Image (cartoon, rainbow, N blue to C red):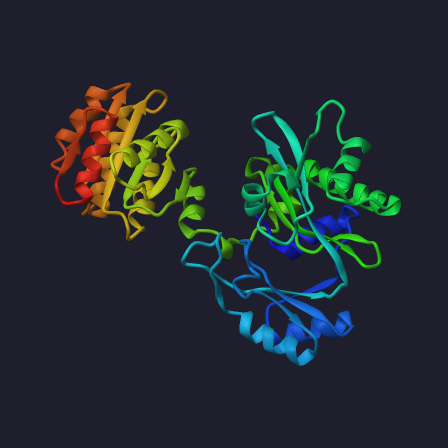
Length: 390
């Protein structure tokens, strides 16, 4: 789960981390009023969407007068920003953050993630802030400092100093300031069960302060039950309607760019199905795991969600009946196909518990189902179906 920059900064402020003062605005009038409340003579007008690269897309602008605040707010509010993280469809800006300006001496990068290779929370920092960290990693990887946190020892002063010195902070007081920030960021990551915490840029001001100029926090959705205060921050306008609908029915669904809809039970099998579709020259339209406790009603809802994607030209059902019995899935497929009037080719591969009964139900359904013997055969037939060859 993602939150907006202003929400991330509120959480950081509550943890004692330094951030700039700002006001949230949903109208041009609120933006101007927010700037007045902040005072000063320079402000930053920031689009609030769940995506990086806002500045390059025209979603972050500097204003040196209230008239400029108004002008930028009018320009950004309601605009669809297209960044490297939004995809070509972009995201519409419904909220702004009006933030006070500051005198920047240097920009850094700081981040916290779980390194699955080591099984440890890892802190990263770089002297190259304000640019895409992926670019730094590719072109100058030596400029990224990584420190794995031993879960037994926790965050130690050594970790903080290594990060601070590693990104070129040498002054004794500034090292203390940076160390305090790194410690606070780690504590926030652990406290709220984050999956990622990213500050880009982390800045040193001309007054020697270390603060977050931007902030991005992602949270583990499986841990939200422990953090109702975080779940309240969820902005459903930023999330896919299909994914939200799938969640209501206990389905794991992720929308993709291809044209072959996938209905599978088990995350590993779903990944394997998508890989084999790619192997045979096709593109999956979604990841959809109906899970082990699916019912006829659940399968019907899954079909509805898949078919709501206009790009879907064929559907591949790949079920291995273990906990989920093949006859239940077959009944769901038949019921859904008849209720929804499925017009696209439907390729089905069943294996496992009650597979013979499941195939019998499909064969006696009078539906134009393309039967497959194994996963490779199913993927090949689904790809051919999208080309009108099946």
